[in-house]
Amino acid sequence: METAAERIVGHLRRGGSFLVVGGIGFVVDALVYNALVFWGGHGPLFALPLVGKVIAVASASVVTYFGSRLWTYRDRSGGQTLRSFLVFALLNVIAIVLQLGCLAVSRYLLHLDSPLADNVSGTLVGQAVATVFRYVAYGRFVFPDDEDAADEAVADVV
Image (cartoon, rainbow, N blue to C red; front, side, top):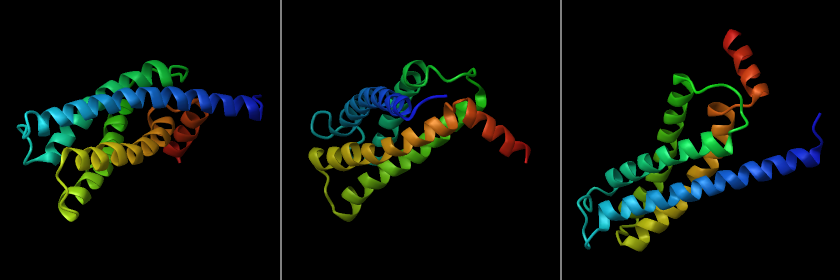
């Protein structure tokens, strides 16, 4: 049985690796978004910033999936199944909606459309909100530990 200190250290390690993977995803998100929306002043999706954000987050999600699978949750048993990938995709759709909500408030309610405003609202604030959601949701539903998987299997039967 694991002590409280060992559990805390385990959460800190997993949280740290999750933040590193998320940081890489953040960079991918920011680079893709800014290229699509602001390249050369007015990028190809300047008039469609939410579409640009969806493409950027989708690109970053591919990176973070593999980082999470291969590093953050490498100790979790079980092979990758279609179900786990579909759950990952669904959770990322929810996370994208969270980020889009932050960007939409800035763009359409506050009428802020500068690169700084978009990056603060959609990339920094939106990513922070989505990261907290992803950390909790990935550990519980996409890469569950043996106890979580057992609880889920029991719930599926009942």
